[in-house]
Length: 233
Image (cartoon, rainbow, N blue to C red; front, side, top):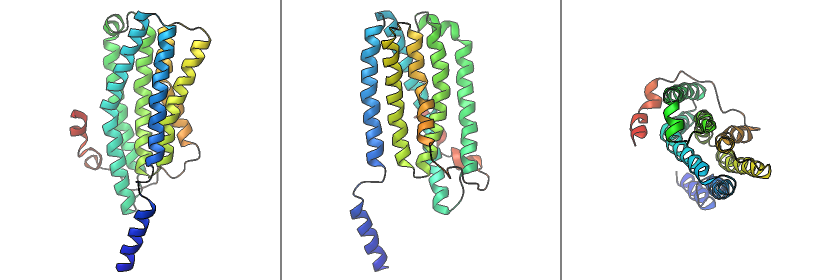
C-alpha cells in the first residue's frame, strides 16, 4: 500500500496539471484569436447592416449550440469515462447520445423552418443565406459536440484541443478566402461561420481508433440523469 501511494505521488509530481490541459488551452487560444480576426475581416468587407445581420447569426449560434449540445457533450464524456473506468465498452452509449442529439437538432431545424420568414426579415435583414448558415450550424455543432464528448470520455484530449483549434483556423481561412475574392454577400460569411466544425471533426478524428468500443446497451438514465438540469442551466 505504501509503495502504491509513493508511485501515485510520484506520478502526480510528474504531471503538475491534468492531462490534456495544454492541448485544450492552446485550442481555446486559437479559437479566440481567429474569431477576433474573423470579425475584423468581415467588418471590412460587409456593409454595416450586413455585418450587423451576420453578428446576429453569430450570437444565435453561440447561444443555441452550447445551450443544446454542450450538456449532451458533458454527459457523454462523464458516462463514457465511467464506463472506461469499469472496463465497459461505450459504443452503445455514444450511439444513444447521437440519437438524442439528432432529435434535438431536428426539433430546432423544424422550429426555424416554421419561423423562417420571421427570422430572415426580423433578424437577418432579409438575407436568406444567413438562414442557410443557421441550419448548417445547428447540424455541424451537433456533430462537433457529440465527437468532443466522445474524445474527452475516451481521454483523447490532444485531438479534443486540435478540434477546437482547427475549427477556428478553418473558419479564418474561409473568411480570408472570401475577402480575397472580394465577396460582400453576408450569406457566404454565414457559411464560413457554420461549416468549420465539420472540417474540425474530420481533422481531429484522423488516425483515431477505438472510440466506439462495443459494450452493453445504454439505458436512458445512464445518459440523462443530469441532462435536464444541464439543459435548463
